[in-house]
Length: 127
Image (cartoon, rainbow, N blue to C red):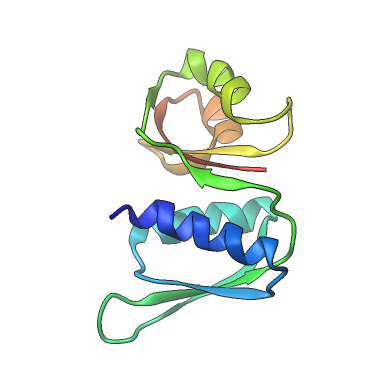
């Protein structure tokens, strides 16, 4: 069971049905970090953690700005010099969409990773 893949596919399914919000369950720190990155880049609105006594849930406000999103499996390790090659592989065009990476500095977009000159593990893509 891949929690990240389930969360991104739930977001994608609710976006295609023009829903205004969705519930992501179970919650994890990784999903919370990815939601924070999506919020900072303007793909989603507010999100809130709901403690249900078990694993928890995230309630996410959708803005209708996501065309496609998904998890990248297997999670490839990417060096700083090769980020642009992976960008060409997963994103439709230059400067359109983001790759989400887990780096030593936390969960970042590929643009922030380039700026900080760090590599990391690819987690997903959004455009």
